[in-house]
Amino acid sequence: MRVILLARRVPGKADAVQLMAPDAQIPWSESASDRIRGILSEATARGAPPRITGVGNAFHTPGAIPGEGETQIFLNTETGDPVSLLVLRRPGQAPRWAVAMGEIVDEAARPPAADTLLWYRLACSLPARLPDSSLEGTDPAQAQTARADYSIIRRGLGACTRTRIPATPDAAQAPSRSM
Image (spheres, rainbow, N blue to C red):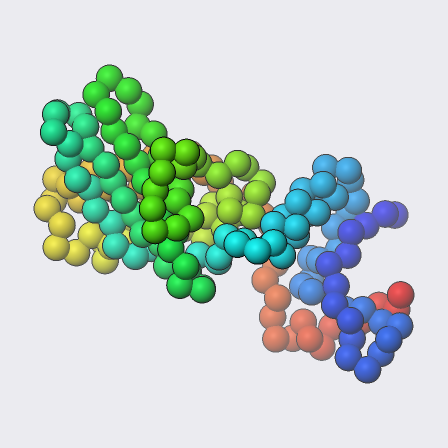
């Protein structure tokens, strides 16, 4: 059986590797290989999307005309690098959302492509609902719009398709496999 192993070297044993997690042996397929190769390339690239650790502040700003507005949701990251979500509302148009990987949101910002590192980090890390703590002190009507916009983002991302079994401290005691 062909498999993809996500493993690390066993210290002091040059001929042995250890699975990174209990589910780190994946049946090989061309699509799985391409997806994993792409994500690993992204993860090791300069400027890789940071891990999302939570949702920070969020706010909605109404526009100058009815039906117009913008919601910004700031995310907390492992590195402290800025990541934010933006929803633009224009009269007569469906709300449009995007993710920004920096201090400035430009017109080129878009939602992340599915099965990319950024997509996984958002789809698998964001809570189902916008936390109330993100909206403290916000006008109730604007908070309601921010919650609705967050729901648009969650629907746009879709469900996390990662089926990982988290590594446990006992995983370090798991048997290793020789090369």
